Image (cartoon, rainbow, N blue to C red):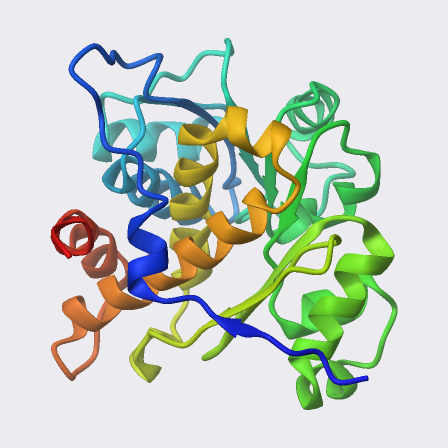
Length: 273
């Protein structure tokens, strides 16, 4: 049976952006824990943290090796590089595998806390052992490896593959691509195609993961009580990511930091509508 997806619109996305209230502080706005990047790929940490902060979150706690930690602090000195209480985790961007990783101890501890988690990159394999709600963010080759399918099969029917993986794994799946497919294990199927083709560039997925991590941290309580919330937040992240890329591109090439810089204005425009 063909998976039938509903288009997630800018109006839908606007309804899931947390606007700070008069009485909010950095803790009540949401604290995102981030375990990303590595000595080999330090830039992933910078891009994800930058995107998360510009999406709107009260604080980012970053845990990682010395090289990415240094680069993160140089770019964003407000980041806290110390373990502590968080409302959600973003794990895995820029990390090859969990086993033998410089951050393996932190990652293993994080997935056991029962908090909402965004798993990307090398941490996708942790989805089966996580104690809390999980959303994974693979591209089609990563999804194929995750569910032991042929990559060409996934590429031919990405929507069906995402829906099947969500049901099989029991987690929300955001399958990256020009059209982003989001599938919940409860059967909610959403899609978005707001991004320009210029967004097919290194680091774009790291920024998307950061956007999603921020959204999950600011809606952590809702994620714990609403089985479909992760899917709606994932689709919202895809819409914001795509619209920010369109703004950054202006019809031409872009860099991922350009996309991150465009996030604030993009979100402001969404809220204005």
